[in-house]
Length: 419
Ligand code: GLU
Image (cartoon, rainbow, N blue to C red; front, side, top):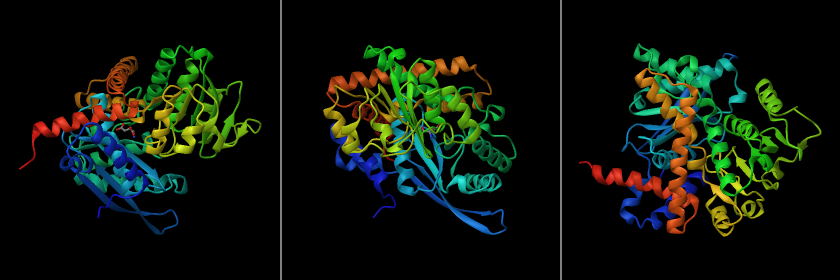
């Protein structure tokens, strides 16, 4: 029996089994690499605006502490459970190791629909969650960040709550903070920028000029919106976008700057245009050069993978593609270039690392330096992944994960098993 269950955890375990087989990792070593070091569940009571008390369940999973503190986002969503959080923590480990950050993976979350509570209630819940986590987190133990349903404001509340308990300002306890509170320039844009940067690099390799290319973006949160903005800036025609409220499609290309302004003002793409509305279920299968799933896990299953009509699959979300879909994509290797999530969306945690470093040093960088260093790390990891995939005759995902798992394994082996 294990507390970790559910489709998302099973997916992370299945992916790991593929890597472990590929690397011929002995069976008695596998649980040590896969199973999280710690999982914390807390009850977060808050005063509702109507005077009643409500209790929300919160989680934090720290996958491994072998290479430094753990690092990862905090998700506020009604679907959050401990199995999903554990899977996301495991993926963070392989991601951080792949790009060379001195972190293990973590993830946290609260089972809540943030749209269903007021701003005052959200602040109370965010603060109570951090307060419950104080014994388990720290700038050298576990560093939180935003994820789905959280943002810079929530990070500022986390940082403030932690700091009030410490009696001094500890900006390095979370990343993804507002620049006014110790955040770094370029963090807000970092994930989407990285997705677009890598997609452009692949288009170049495929000899497709960005100005002749088309893109489709599923999800218009922090990742999807900045990916769309950056692709648009490169001259790519973004022909379709969707979010939880619906979808928009225009063969001539959407007016992305106008859509960004609309989403910033209204919180979603709803109400932008009646004529351009389309069925969100059809967005992923539209013919395009770059497809960016930047919403939920497991949106591309085997059926969907067979129907994709993109040249580049740039995974902005964590875990958008199931292991069954990977089998289909392996058959379609010559048609679709996969940029796997742990590489494609790693710009976010890379710049989180820069934020942590700047906070620890109290020395802040220009945005240009942040972005230049981000792209340098993405290029290096991309080159390593492609070279490994070629050398071993494996998929990009297997190659990227194998590099990550190998690094964690080497660190565990050289440190040894205590006591
Ligand atoms: N939540 C983001 C991710 O899944 C960012 C994590 C971080 O910046 O620590 O990669």
